[in-house]
Image (cartoon, rainbow, N blue to C red; front, top):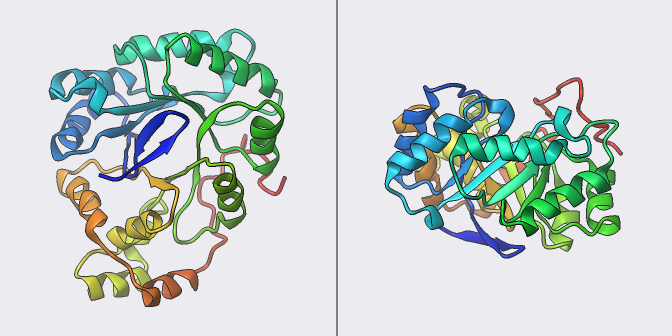
Length: 273
């Protein structure tokens, strides 16, 4: 699988998301994904499945150095000293010696961003994580992280799918050599039922969901982390790597609405900032 090099790490462009897979039921799902060939696993403290993800990794037989494991700190743990405690808890649950990426999951309105990032950089310097990143930052926040704090941001993870433009953010992070990781790449299931994507899928002999993933991976510097509980869906997502879109496909997808944000928690930042 193609990987993106960033800040000294190599991230597989197609990862496996574990959002809304809490508890032990997550373990066999992740074991299945690893068995099929996924090597990039995305979890978070808030998902309440780090124990299960760690158990799946331990039982998989896959060499640790062949995996890329991401976890994240929740927005209520961004106070001074709290990030390190949250990280230690996550690492203990995962039963790993290190993670490959540690990320701020959501920003908080009252966080001291330089202090948060400095604490994360210390964790990196201590060998706890190979790289650091941020999720759900608006333009003002990512600019502060990169240009003022000069943090070695290895990835920005945000909502991105065929019904939402991230052109402005993509233009910025590409200019800084930072890949964009697309979460909710299937628009929380909506992509599978879109007529335009279905029509393109029929043309290529694949599903609408596979077209949505292929569209993301067709773009430079973009990583996608779809989640899938069924083995058949996991296999289908991997098979999306084989889909090659043409200019007609790209034009049709470009014509879809691009203002549909589906992840809108009350603590989200001002996206226009």
